Image 1 (cartoon, rainbow, N blue to C red):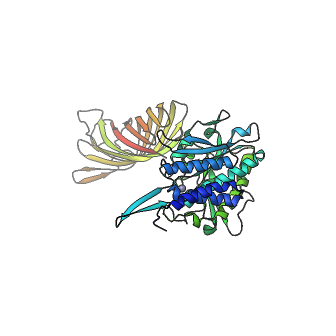
Image 2: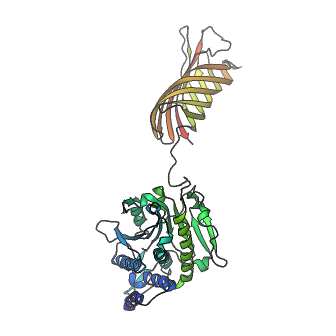
Image 3: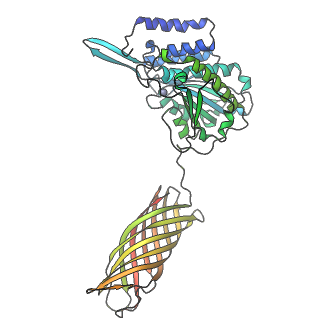
Length: 488
Ligand SMILES: [Zn+2]
């Protein structure tokens, strides 16, 4: 089954299957036909932008029509045949019909490979029966059922067969960003929920259906209440309101802040392998899922409101104007003597701590903090190293927004110097400095997203010397540090 030779028989079977629609079909035979036609060798793996992809699109278009929908092609690339096919089934409510529930499935797959062995050209077709002839057959049959009973659906339902999923979610990205309208209303923008049905043909084998992204809707279980699958098959819901989940056609909708679910029976099937064939597909399972989603979509289409939970892992939360973070930095510190002809020399200053910004208007805010400092100052007779905990309070003027900003601030600090030592000759002096000092602090800050780069200066106003050894008069501290901060 691995290597497949393309026989004219495949083309004949395609034509036969296509023409079998002249006979009346029931739902199961329609699903089987769609799976077997789309996953047949004659479509050569339905690679997007190829003549086989185009052939698949034409087949799907005709199935939309046969199923009572009014399909449209949506070209997704210039100079290419890549296209989505979709149909809107208009809702029965004059107001709610302007809101949409999208049920989508990609129909493209990986195409084929050729290998030459002993001079014989061998063609390997990736038929993509589970991925994703299965989902395509499901939405086609679902569309048929809804179109037949469209009076029972107050919101409009959009059935989409996406192209070019395998090459980078191009079809769904195009749709999610498109301004395609129905009755003058932009469909994508007014979509309340999208579901991507991707690989739904292995229900019997996996015994479960996984619906991911449920946490993106407000009160989501109301739509699924009392709806179950037959026998021992389970429905597994995954919240995913905090993390991005696997790549499928739901993702571009999430990026447009449209709630979107990923629906699958799992990757038990030979995922992205040539063995992903139609004869392994549980078509009865697809029918069962079609009936299930008919009820789910009906609940969604008829609810008074379908609202998002406001949680979407694809949308980065803007940093609020009140925030906190940590900062770390280094610079220099010196002790200035106010009298006499002695001056202190610069030595190191390290600092790290937490800070909080509290906005008081668009332009003004307070910064409060708590920092640990390890500093040193060179004096005439010695070098004094000390540790302190300081509490700055600064009033800021901010220009910019919550992502990029430039700020200048002025305020004060209070230092608790809990340890100080100096060396004079061989003697060590403890508690050389006063225990408390305070002064003025100024800051210039540049914020880029969550990072803050700041330049801080501290000018002490109180005498640093507890018990001056020499008469220098008032000794004050001057510290400059460069800090990098991160906002949480
Ligand atoms: Zn897929």
